[in-house]
Image 1 (cartoon, rainbow, N blue to C red):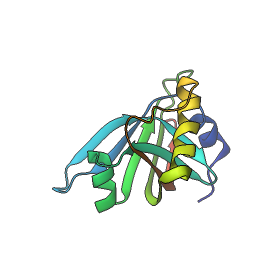
Image 2: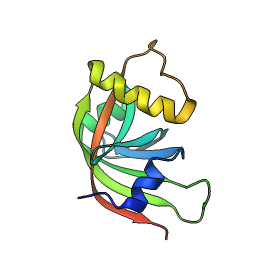
Image 3: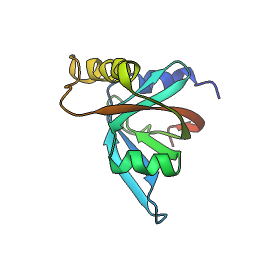
Length: 127
C-alpha cells in the first residue's frame, strides 16, 4: 500500500506514537515510540531484547496510533506488519534519523537498537 500524503505528514512530525503488539499469550502490549518513515515503510526503533521486539518477531502484526499535536481530535491509526529489521550500520543510520527528528542529535550508543520496517495494510486519519 502506498502511504497517503496526509499520513506521511503526520508520521514525519514529532508526535509520540503508541505501538500495540501481541504477547505470546495473545494479550495486548502497548508502548510509546518514536515513529517515522523510510521509503514506503513506517519505522520504529526498539531494543534487541525488548518485549516489543520479542512480540514482533513472534507475530509481525501491529497497530500504531498517534495524536497530532496541532489537532488532538484527529487521531492517526494504522495497522501493518514488520517486513524487515535493520541493524548494524544501516540500523544506526535509521535510529539517528529518528533521534535527530525528536531530539536534534544522534542517539546514544549505550544500548543496542534495531529498527523495524513496517508495511501498512490499513490507515485512518480522524474519527
